Length: 317
Image 1 (cartoon, rainbow, N blue to C red):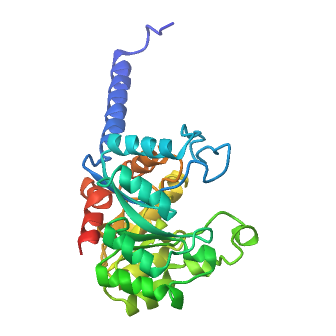
Image 2 (tube, rainbow, N blue to C red):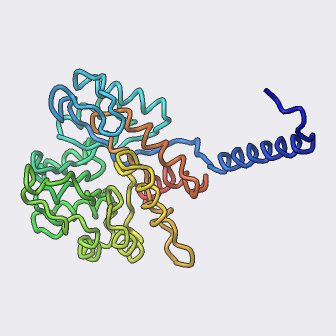
Image 3 (cartoon, rainbow, N blue to C red):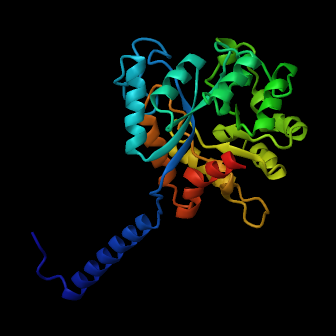
């Protein structure tokens, strides 16, 4: 029922206010710039479909259960998403036999990575050299050193870092917390201090030409990550896992902290790289991309750097 006694001027005012509100909402949404070019994923895994047990658990963020019921299906579903999302190349790591199969399936899309985990010790150095020379391995990472109680300064690792520096091989080291209580369960040697980015300082000094990137951008050590990256301009970081497993506000606050460097000679948007940390959940790729795309305080140019340019430069340095 309408009120016919309401002044026309009041109706006009309300109409104008609605138009202004709609215009404000539209302009606010349109302020989010998105990137539509090719993408390089610097952090993906070549895992078997049953890596985390059977039945395969759902994606912890989306609760979507993976469709793959075999290792080959994981590869095919991953490649399908890679093509759909315009991912030019993905740097994959996992058991060496898995990496070889993925690499053989799509040699141009995949760059193989040397993987370390307590359940997956490093191969002998000669084997690593051979796989690098054959083109199976092009990056050392993910190195989950802390899970096995290792630090970048341990003597057993130095020959691998020497090989990487001499051949310009990028080295990606896990730098973030893991699930709660892991030191009391399956990784008794894990220590929080070993994923504090400051722990790589001696490594950077010892191997000044080594290409190092902090996986997961050192979360939650924001100040320490900024400190080590601002002190050493050959240290990069990837925004993997935290870009789809974390709540939006936590992820965006962390990225804002890394990129809000006004007045400081340290533009980290030139050294942050995109990674999905896709394990057995292909839907994590689109989710992780979208969660960067919707960050309003990053420009289209900055997103282009994160999604593509920085990784291209890092690899070619």
